Amino acid sequence: MEFYVDVQTLHDTNMTVIKDEKNQPVYILTGRRGIANDGFFLHTISGNELGEIRQRTVSVNPRFDLLIGGEKVASIKKMFGVWREFIFVSELNWMVIGNMLANQYHIYHGMKTVTTIASVGTASETILKLDIANPRDVVPGLLVAALLDRWRQANLANPLVRHDVGISYGL
Image (cartoon, rainbow, N blue to C red; front, side, top):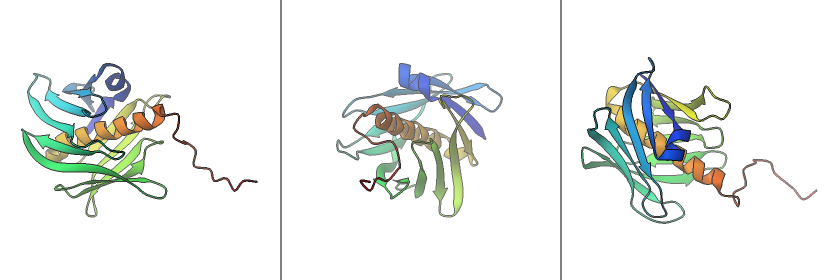
């Protein structure tokens, strides 16, 4: 199943409509931002809440809880690798490996691909395409993708973060 998320609209208005491969609206994603209360909510088009992702700790690498139907199903914390970001989604045993600058990620459960996320369609790379194989992974996959884009937006907005990967030897 393919889903398309306009992350620029989510960033600008804290709400976006998620569409399927037939360009039909299927979900509504809303968010809130703040130092201590980041979070996203996923609803059906009719307004029924399916799940949420909510910040639990305030730190350089905050922890988020993933809730589906009001029940906590996973915790998420960002870790940094040498060249790529690593995010582990505990309880679901998902490993997210990707590149925030390129806005491309792969989510794995063991050796199986759960979801691929990539920017598509526009020069500004504001549309994310998610390819989710299993219907039970749709809600957590969409919420994790929203969180990944939130972290990406935070990195791009911070002028103190170095965005090039070049190495300088002082020459």
